[in-house]
Image (cartoon, rainbow, N blue to C red; front, side, top):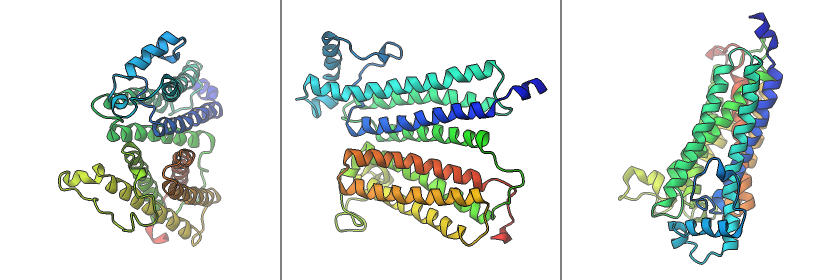
Length: 353
């Protein structure tokens, strides 16, 4: 038993997970470009092994282009598309899938090496197995999402897109959580934070996650291309068309007006909870790392709000929209780090608020 414990390499495992987390982050950026360029339906076939290679000759390009011509997206949106234009959108979907395969290799090969060498720290083995399974499941979810776009529509289902994005953020968050424990564990004598302060940090993280999921609904329905003004929407605080009796409560997810308005509202709630946490942090004595994490989270959310507004005003200019996606991932990781720091030490009694 002592031999196993002595062979554990928490720093090496943590650095490997850092590389994995970076690749997942990059995957989110590639996925955003794929979605914004309407490239996701360009690859009709799912060939897990052979599909790692792009078409290598003119005949193969003509074959995959012919398959794309059978889709609703081509018939309804891109019927005048040339082969050269098709190659542009094909690249992003192919690169998106290739990057997913690379993540699998970067994760799986070191994992089995550490497992074989018995270098995984105690308690982490089940979590690392879980991440491996989640990564495979994410690939299946991705193809399930793409399949939804081949049936009488020009884009994938916004609900499946939200599930795919939500799983990506869950995997990224799970990885960051493990990295924190391996590379910067909480000091054993850490002074606890007030219970209410910790709860507010948890609320901020939860609201941020739901804001991100609603962002997927906005992207999935191209709802960012309407009402490109701020702070009102077409001169109104609540736009006409928010509620549609044909959908009932589904209007909250189906009408473009509701989806964009709700995403804005959740962003405001995220800002309020985070800025409230920041203001509170200056009124109480906090450990250095806790205060640092709150400050970084506040800065990240401030820039993310600015990016969201600029993306909207620019009518979803591609570079700004991609930065907005990156900002969401950075803010999410900052919120998770803050939450991890807040949970450190024994919980202070409510009276210590």
